[in-house]
Amino acid sequence: MNKPSIFHTFDEYYQATRSGIISPHSEFHIFRYRDLKPSVVSKMDLFRLTFYQFNICKTSNSLINIAGSSEISKDKQLIIFTPGRLAQWEKFGLWEGYILFVKESFIKVNSANLNSRLMHTFLSPDSHPITTLEDADYKLLEDLCEKMIYEYEHLKAENLLVIENYLQVFLVYIKRIQDKLKTTTGSDFSSAHIDIHSKFLKLLEKQFLDQKTVGVFAEQLNITPGYLNECVKSVSGKSAKEMINQVVLLEAKSLLKQTSLPVKEIGYQLNFQDYSHFVKFFKAQTALTPVAFRDLP
Image 1: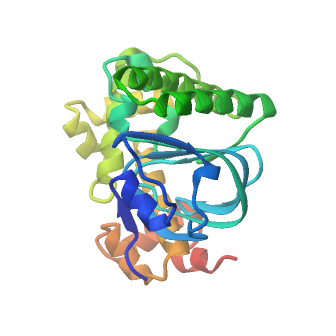
Image 2: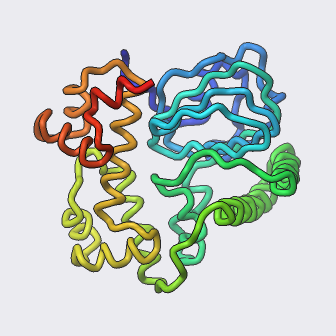
């Protein structure tokens, strides 16, 4: 099987999906499902995006596979494709709702506002990509999407400013929706912990294939491994090593289930020293060998 496609621009992705869509802006784009042309492909093979894709689905008859987790999409769902995650989808029915594409530079995740960074921790590499929406939650997101589409159709500098603010509200709503579905680890962490946690996630997103030790990430952040663990665990409830292992494991599962690559080749792509180290890592995380996991129905 060929290597996964990597899409750096919205239009590259639109061309690959044959959606008949062209983006007039390089960092943000929103449209309704009904704007897609009939030529849109029914299946997308393995790919990675370098930007975020939010699907706000009223109806979405599809098989979604993100980071090795396959799920049949249902009505009233939010589906988030985050940068770097291996993904795949297959359409087998009606799509209705909205699609929003945004680059990180437009979201301003890395702004100086610490509360903003905390607000967007749900976009971290280990966040669950599919959330079922209550009717009221879907209506909130639908209304915001319509407002953003209106501004987008009159695209000038002042409209982009309005969209940026609507987008921040959109992300806050998503954070609230997801927080209702999970137990929090508490809020006894400082702004410094939030800052370190956010920077660690960005390094992890870019370097997890090459770096797998807490010490290496701590060194890049000019802190001790112990302090990095303290910061990450206080915000996420997981140690830095657990976060590293989880992201590597998600990648391994995706490659095992979504490609026909030999297991040894997958271990090599994940930069394990040899096949036995990869098997040992995978079994420690799942209690299964990579071969046994691949053979699961």
